[in-house]
Length: 193
Image 1: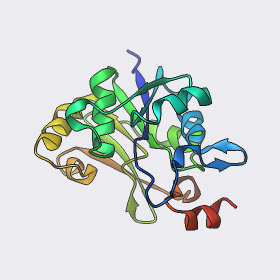
Image 2 (image 1 turned 30 degrees about the vertical axis):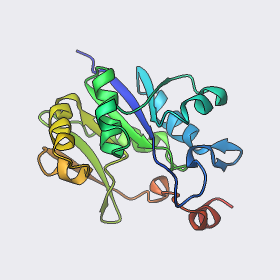
Image 3 (image 1 turned 60 degrees about the vertical axis):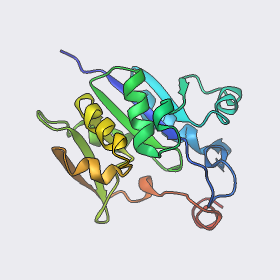
Image 4 (image 1 turned 90 degrees about the vertical axis):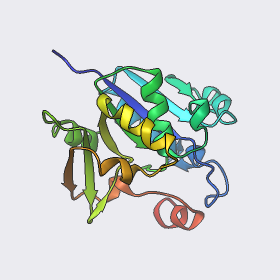
């Protein structure tokens, strides 16, 4: 039986350190979020962008063709874990391929590598780059939804806390560039300009 994958693009952050919505910052003339969308779209039956309600119309105006949703009401604004849960709550799939919008060097090779490491009884495939876990560019099995909800219900918003209770395949990846996270104008100057 073929597995179904849904792509989840996390775009709900406030971009405080960046100073403006990072999703629409440009690299080579393209908005950051489009790199995540391009990396995921070939492997998914649906792309879901989770953002705050203020930005939803901007993504529509930009021409994003996937689904645009906000966090579930009870977890609104509670970070990436709430975004992952909200996509799982609204759309059913076997696996969810997650990416944030502030990784403008992400590419399909990384996603293919993650997908090729799905194993029976694994709840998540998490890359480790330069010794650091990257849980926001990762695969999550649908069976983790209940655990995520229970963590959020207890006020625990850390993805790391969820991983502690999962059977995780940690995958060492050498391609550091694909995981460059642009959080500030300093990062933007360093990596983009």
